[in-house]
Image (cartoon, rainbow, N blue to C red; front, top):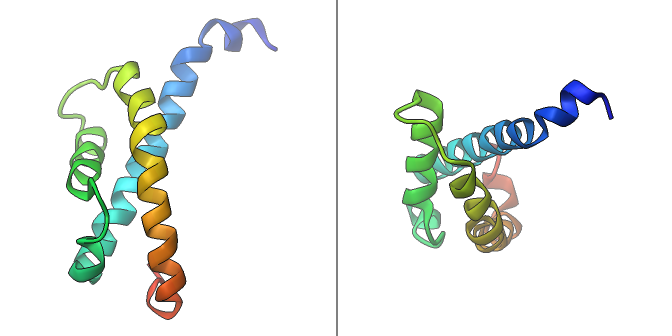
Length: 95
C-alpha cells in the first residue's frame, strides 16, 4: 500500500463509513416520506435519519467509534427489515 494512504488508513475508512451512513439515512428518510407505514416496521429509523442529518449538515464532528458501532450493530438489523420490505413491495421501491 502507498505509505501516505497507509498512514491515514483509519481516517479514510471512517470517511467512507460516514458517507455510507449518510446515504443509508437518506434512503430511509425517503422511504419514510414515501410510505410511513413501511417506515414504522424499521427499528431505529429515526436514529439513522438523525445520524444522516448530523453527517450531512456537520452539526458536530462524528467520532470514529460511533460510526463503527453503528455499522456493526445497527445496520445489520435494519438491512434485514428493509430487504424484507423491498421483497414484499418491489414495485413501490423505486426510490
